[in-house]
Length: 149
Image (cartoon, rainbow, N blue to C red; front, side, top):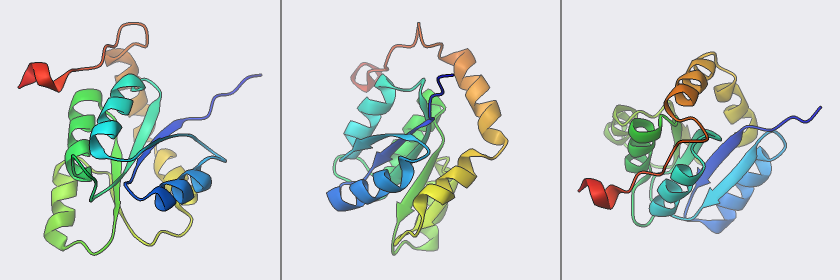
């Protein structure tokens, strides 16, 4: 029986952290890695039917993590978590206001286990059903923000 691992999108401008995050996640997930906010949006739009969660750094070139996450949540219904260090409570509240389901403080120990616990929550089953209804694999087309502006 062929089983497919869920896909996690990881976006962080630090190559070493991206690599560490990916290595902790790959035993349980397929991982898409991105180096900045715009690449995260483009990748998510191209693979939205497969992504169960986005793990986003706060400070990235082109777009900040909470802003990327807000777009992912509103346009594609992809849940996201922010991974960062040294944020004020006001900044953490901003991430949650954009739709973040969690805020993980760096340095991160055992990110794979933390993400597994998040994805195992019952809400992910209902999110998955809703996304499948709204974005069937055969018909979903990436949204071009340039056309929206």
